[in-house]
Each structure stands twice: as structure tokens, then as C-alpha cells.
Length: 346
Ligand code: 5GP
Ligand code: MN
Image (cartoon, rainbow, N blue to C red; front, top):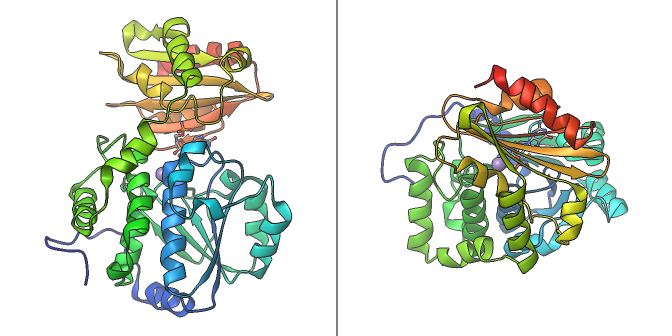
């Protein structure tokens, strides 16, 4: 069965006949697969990786997922996530599975730099390399590409990948949960322009299967600690500024702020969207001091493409409406630079 009651979308990423044959030849019982994703993995990175691993294991492959650094707690709701190898903590194991692998999948990133030191090892690996991703301007030397920057999430592409291989029947509730988790988190709960009828068609299929969609929403959104709520409240009341006649908003947090509220990984997730939610704001940024660098998130709606701003001024990149970058200057210097360069984009 293919998932199509209505007209099939024709995307340029559809696997060519020869790629399909290549993939079918390697996705066979006993094939050793490594799935890798980006630093500071988000719901889409982990959801898509776990969904792919669970599918490939149903085909008899032996899978390992390697992520560069730790997962935020709420991501452990995703089925299969407890088996993930965190490179930072289990380097020897990560190296072992990579050197043993026949195939490496790169999910939700398109430049090996985004996978940190593990990315360097992938570059040197002789395994077949498959990219499944939705970022623009790939910088990735692989063997098979299944990428589409118009697609809302890598999770959706993983579903499409399974569909291309004619294996929709193998999608069970855990796989649906993992894909649904990635869809929610990368689409701002199905609100971004990249959401299309295909996205909802996939969700309709999951609901027909009996997916408890509300449990996934709960796992993502009802997961606050007191500290997190108070940190968010502090950020909004003390660290939010408007620029450019209210068209740009930004929030910043220094290391001491994060310490004050015992911030944990993921506690500042979504803060940038609070800034973007102000009426009249078209672009928002969030600056957060981390060890010897400032990590930046950008979001926009309308005509400002934040991936260009991130790429040109803050060593970053991403999507038109959601991008990120970093700076090695102090947070005050970074914000001063932002105030100056943002004028060119609004
Ligand atoms: P977030 O603000 O959620 O950390 O990142 C939003 C998006 O920006 C990510 O999905 C990713 O595509 C991109 N992104 C974030 N940080 C970086 C970075 O340091 N470099 C690049 N190239 N892209 C980034
Ligand atoms: Mn993504």
C-alpha cells in the first residue's frame, strides 16, 4: 500500500530508480546501520532518527543512533531514544559502531560540521552515506540524497522514505509516535508555512492507526519545572527588548541568569517564539551565554530570511524562518553587533 488517497506530490527529492535499487540492496537483514544527527538534538532530530531506526530494525538491519551531545530530558519520551549513543559520553562505543557499519544515515543536518567530532569520523568512513534532511544549501558528500528544503521536517521525510520503499504497513504506533513528535516540534504545532496537506494526510493515517496524539503533546508541552517557568518569566520581564520600531524583538540570558534558575538543557527552548509572538514583531532573536561562546536562535515570519543573517554574520545557518548561529565575542558585543547588522534585513 502507498499512502495516497489523493494526488501524490511530485517532489524533486523522490528517489531515482537507481537510488531506490541501491537502498533496497542495502536495507536487508544483517546490514549494520549508523544513524547520526546534529548537535543539541531537537525533537525532529531524535524523532526522525528513532523512527528510521525502528523501521530499519523491522527490515532486519542492526541499528545504532549516535548523537554528538546530550539529549534534553523530554526527548526521552520518544520510543527507542533510550538506546541512543551520546558521542560525548560514549566515544569508544560510537567509534566502534561506525567502523563496523555498512551504511551511515545523516538526519536533520546537511553539513558534517553540525555533527561535531563525530562528523569528522563520518567524513573518513567508507560506509555508504545517505542524507535525509530538509535544510537549504547542502554541503554534504554522500551517495544517496533524500532532501527537500520545502519539507516541514525530517520526520515527514522519514515517513516519505518508508513510503517510497513501499513499507507503510511496517509503520506501527512507536514509529508513528516518533514521527509525530518530530512533526509537532519542527512545525510549531502545525502552524508554520511549510506544513502542507501531505503533513495532515500523514497525521490522519496515524490517527486511523490509533495513535494517542494527545500523549505526545503532553510529553512535549506539559513538561515544565518550576525553575523553567520562572526562568522564562524572568527572561520575558527582564531581558526582552524591542528594536526597529517594534519589528524586531530579542531576549538574552547570561550564564549567571541560567545558574540562578538552575537551567537545564532545553529550559530555554521556545523562548525565542515568545519574542516573536508580540504583535507587530516580524523577527526575533534569543542570545544565551554558554561556555566561551554565545548561542543564538533566530525566528521570523514574513519577508526576513534569518538563515541569511545567521550565515552572513553569526557562523550559522538553518531555514528561512528558523535559524541559529554562534559568536565567540561576549554577549554584550554579540548583541551590539546584532543591533547593527539587523538594520540591513528589516
Ligand atoms: P534552534 O534555534 O532551534 O537552535 O535552531 C533552529 C534551526 O537553526 C535549526 O533547525 C538548525 O537548522 C539551525 N541552526 C541552529 N544552530 C545552528 C548553527 O550553529 N549552524 C547552522 N548552520 N545552523 C544552525
Ligand atoms: Mn528539522
